[in-house]
Amino acid sequence: MISNERPSPYKRWSPMSQNSSSWSQMPPRPPVNEDTLKSGIVQIERKTFVFTLKENMRGRLLRITEDVGGRRNSIIIPATGLADFKKLLDEMIKAAEELPPAKAPEAPPA
Image (cartoon, rainbow, N blue to C red; front, side, top):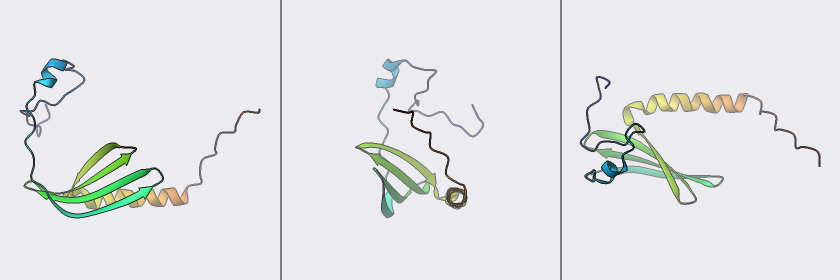
């Protein structure tokens, strides 16, 4: 265990413990009271991204949710890391604009 990790009473699933019976016996997580401060939506091709700035008892966070055909995936970035996240994102945007596109593979002859 890393020094800053604490055991959780909710016992997260790990590949090392694939005992499905213990997974179903876990107590449900209590709801976390979160206030939404700001929200925005971006549609890019077939994907919808929802950006939501929230605040809870632990602080502020940015939740980015990707919705593709009803399937959702989210990442949460603590507000303390948003400046670093923006810096890296700006670098990626700059690289995407400056680097030439990769050659598309040629289709085999018909």
